Amino acid sequence: MGSDQSAPVVRYKKELLKLSWRLVLTVQKDADAKSKAETLDVETKSQFSSISGKEVVHVRPFHEDFETQFFKYCPDLQQKFPTDFALVSKMIQSFISTAIESKSIGKLAKKFAKNHKKYNLSNEHFEGFAQALVDTLQTRLASFGTIELMKIWRETTNAIVKEMQKSYLASKK
Image (cartoon, rainbow, N blue to C red; front, top):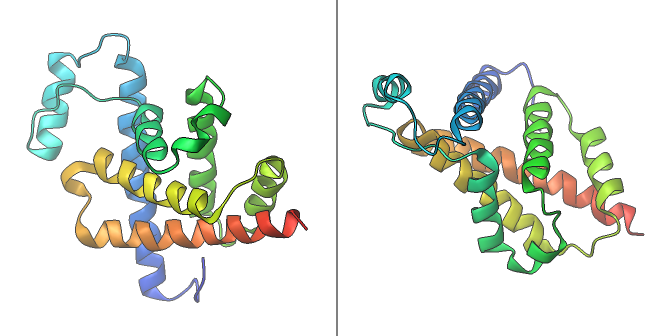
């Protein structure tokens, strides 16, 4: 994802991304398990309370948070999305997991470009995706989403989206 992968600062940032992403996915697993119940049980509430210092009553699945944020930035795409946004969300989660684990996202970006070539995506759509992802992460990380951590996520997300956009534009030629 850019500079020398062996530099300590780069390694630390990458570890922060991985750890915070695991936290987001852990919250996701709990939300998926509890989504039918609408509220978390007492045992889970106390588990989250001990983590954040705040009582969590309801955790929405990742796709609901992301969908809300994404369509806030890109309302024109709402009609183009599949009705099963949970499936789209799982693909996004897999993409982000792979992107933060890999040294280069070139292959991922090319696959994205191939799968999205048929859509007429604009700069605003790419920017909206990046902003929606960071907003969703901030929501899900709550008090763990420090200013510094969110700055790292914003930089990383922008780099990922820039690579996606570059591959997408190349595929349109």
